[in-house]
Amino acid sequence: MASAFGGVGLALGDNRAVRTALQIVEAELATGITVQILKRISGRESPQSASHFHGLFRPFPNMHDYSNNETKYYSFPSGHVSTSVAVLTVIADNYPEVSWIKPVGYSAIGLIGISLVARGWHWFSDYPLAVAIGYMFGKVISGRNNLMQNDEGNSSWSIYPDYKNGLGVGFAYQF
Image (tube, rainbow, N blue to C red):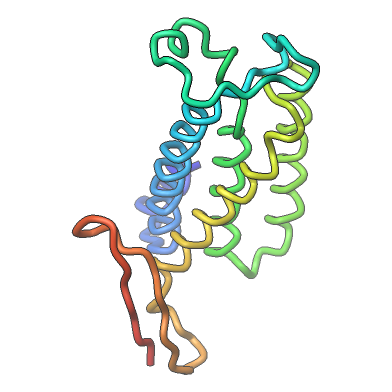
């Protein structure tokens, strides 16, 4: 998705498409890193290797065991769903006038979730946190990078996470 938006944006001189592409990459990286950390903390079994009816959580699994048998520890939360929600949120926030993006996007994400359960990769309970993570990162990234686009002429204050010089908090006044 990022390369499609970036390619079209560069070819047509569309800054909004280029900004969307960059935000998609940022959302994918932030979501992916967060999900991988949570997977390694929670250690939840996937359905295909479950030793218990609902899959056991084995918090902080040994890294050697984790690497040798990822499906035993890799289910929670879903990276597929969290990344998909983050990308959808970025696109929908950058193109609010396109009314079909959200219904089509959320339907596709629902089908992704169902297929992952059907394949034995995830439990349905892996999804609520994944959706929250993806939505949060999508909103933060698209909102932070769109601060200076006040078309209504209203002034406002914004608080946002700042990663330029390490983790911090930024403030912006828009007028």
